[in-house]
Amino acid sequence: MKEVFISYAHDNLNDREELIKHLTVLKRQGLISDWSDKKLIAGEDWDQVIKKKLDDADIVVFLVSSEFLASDYINTFEVEETLKKHHENTVQIFPIILNNCMWQQTKLNSFQAVPSYEGRLKPISEWADKNKAYYTVSIELMRSIKGDISDDSHLTKIYDYKKAVSKWERKANNENSPLSLDHLFKLLLITFLIVSGIGCFYSFFFMSGTIEDRLPVIIISFSFTTVSMAAYFIWHFIELKYLRKELNNPNN
Image (cartoon, rainbow, N blue to C red):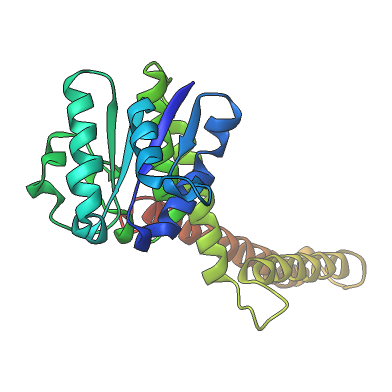
């Protein structure tokens, strides 16, 4: 089991909580045990406890932000002590960039930071979907721990597809109406099929005259079916085009 020390500025407590939530599966699997100063007990010598936990850590996660860089204690002690351990090959350093800040002008610039999107670093604050950002971070941390994790790209594709479908449904549906656009098209298709069926039935069994006399009614009946089916398939073509656009949109 890897001991993970989480270093963060107190202004970023919500980010720490979100990270911990996404690491729960790794903790349950016995891969990691996390610690941060949130676990300090009243009456403890916090400085000594932090030093010991930092010394015991196998991985140090830095939640890097403008607030993080503004903290003298974090940068003069936690970062410096971790860098010393890293030079001794006794710890892994895992920077997570929370927002745009001057972290590249610090010593942490030497380390691969996360999360990234399509090969470039993308701070968590720039993700429209924060859940996906922390999912990406947790996958990268698992890679760092296990080293031999199999390709998970299919999981990301499934996640993206489900999110795009959900977003499409929210836009396609009128929340003030009991029927969505999809349901409306299905209702129209069923209605036209019934109308065309009635028209054909009437022309064959109730109309007098030759087949030429009944042909216009038959043609009109089948036209209803053709038009409704064409409209339904065009609707789903537009839907698929939208989903592809959503999946390829870097701001998702």
